[in-house]
Image 1 (spheres, rainbow, N blue to C red):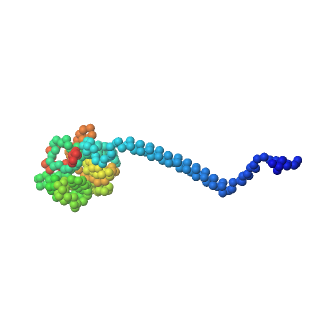
Image 2: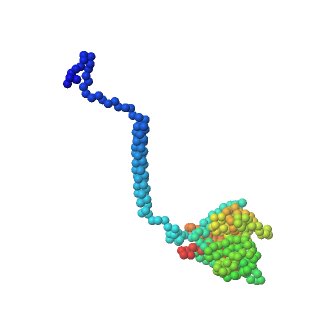
Image 3: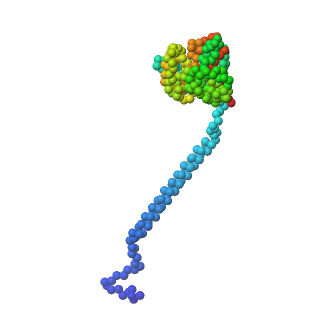
Length: 298
């Protein structure tokens, strides 16, 4: 105890331990702390991002599960489409001061018929006289190559234009030596010749000897559909051809278009529109291109 009691007058005594002096943190320690803070922040962001992804996946799964209850889309046409209504789209226009009437068959297939049709069958929604005929050696005959149900009626090549009606296709062309003549025989199809009017979108020039007359034509439009287009006024064959070209026609041949030549069409409402003399005394070689209602399985 003496060492504690011997204190001079000019001395003081401090009771207790002397606190240790703390050193300032080094640069390395600061950097380590900052890195730990950044890693901590990144971990928080990553966790939030994962939670968001899980939430989105959950919502998508719920949405998809709701659609799974619906029936899958099928490529087969439903029965109501296969048995769709057969009718003719009828429209009128004026091109180059020529009035044109267009008849586009819907859900129907073309074929030829030979012989006078006195009553229009209900299955024939569109029809028009097709190949020309004339009196040859005191007998009426079809003019131009003609095949009916695979049977050759006439072999004449007097006209460039033709129409071949085969089981799977209908061809309108311009060729005197086409192979479709033989194909019509082999496939039990139909074939007839007429004046070519438009071929591959170009007007076909015809002899200027033709007088102005009522005109009628079998056409293929640029969208592939077949139709009949005629006029109720007398025009030249070339003027008619030019008007057809301007009416989106790619290929066309003439049909019988005199005042007596018959054409009929049935619209969507079931109304029948008839042109020509349906009670005229035509010879037995008179022929028609008709469109029959397309039925399921045909």
